[in-house]
Length: 470
Image (cartoon, rainbow, N blue to C red):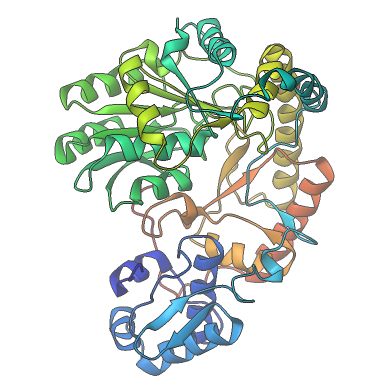
C-alpha cells in the first residue's frame, strides 16, 4: 500500500482554497486528484493531525473533509488502516467518470483512421496462415519489423529490422525499458511538463525523477538540462522531442546534439518518445529522428496516428538491447497478438496517405479551436502549434484544477495542468485537444467559457500558487 505523506499531499494539492467552506474545498481538491489519477486507488492518506499541521488548518477541518470524501465514496476508513483512497460503487467508476453523457476532453486522441476497417478485413484474410501457431509473438512479425524499419529510413534514419521490437503500444514500451534499464536507486531525467503515464512508469519502483523545463515558445531549458545531468547523473533520460506532449514544441537540431553530447558524458540512455512525431500539420519540415544525431532509443506507436484501440507500438534500439528487452518482457507478457500486427502491417502499406489525411483533420480542428477560444476566452494565451493533437493554454492565473473540477459539473472532462507535472505544478495551464469533431469542440468551449465566468476573477486576498517549473 502506498502511504502518502502530508508533505507530498500538500504539494499535490497546490492552491486548493476557494470561495466555499475550507473543508469542502479541501475535499473537492482531493477528489479531483483521485479522478485525475494523481492519487492512486488504495493509497493511504495522511493522518488528520499530520495533514492539519502541514496545511495550517484545524484538525476538525481535515476530519470534516475526510468525512465528506467518505460520504461521496472516495475514501474508506477502517480502524487501524487509516483513510484509504477508493472510488464510489465498490470499485466501479462513479457516474461522473463514465464517458456516457459526458464530453471527454481529458484524452488527446483521434477517432479510428478511415482505412482501419478495410485494413482489418484484409488482415483477417491473412490470419488463417497463422492459426497453427500460438497467436502472439515476443519480437514481432518479420514483415512488420521490416515495414517499421523502412519507415525510419524514409524519415532519414537507416534502420535494420533487427533493431525493431514490436510492443503492445507505446506505454508498454516505456514500462519495458524502465524495468530493464533502471535499478531502484537510479535517477531518470524527465521533461516538465510531460506525458503523465511516463512519469507513472518511471516511478513504479520508486525511481527519482529529475525534471527539466519545457515551455511553449521557449522550448527546452538547455542550461537546466545540463545542470540536471551533472546533479543527478541519470541512468535514463525520457524526452519527447517532436510535437512534445503537451506543449507542442519541437526540439531543434542543435538542442538534440547538445542533449546527446551531455548524455554520452554521463553514460545516460536517452529514450525518445516519438508517438507524436508523425502528426505534423504544417510549418517547418520535420527534424531528423533523435537517433540520427547520436545513440538514442526510439519509441513509436500507431495509437495516435491510426487509433488508440490498435495496441501496436515499437522500440528502435541496438540489437543487443533488443535481445535484453525480449527476455525482460516475459515477466509481464508473452508477446504481441498476431492479428493486430497484421492490421498494422496493412496500414503501414499506405501510411503516407493516412498521415496526409490526419494532417488535414488536425489543421481544421486546430483552426476551429483557436477561433472559438479567441472569441469566447480572449484573455487566455493559446499557442499556435505545428503538430500534435492539442495546445497548452495559459489561463493567466493558477486555476486549472479548480476549472477542471467545476467543468465536470457542466459535463466536460478535462485533464488539469498539474496532471502533466510533478508535485502539483502547472496550475496556470490547461491542455485542450483539437482532435475531436467540430460540434464537440464547440460544446467544450461553451462549457469552458461558462465555467470560467462562474469562477469569477481571482481574489486578491487569496494567496497565489506559482508553479516552480514553467
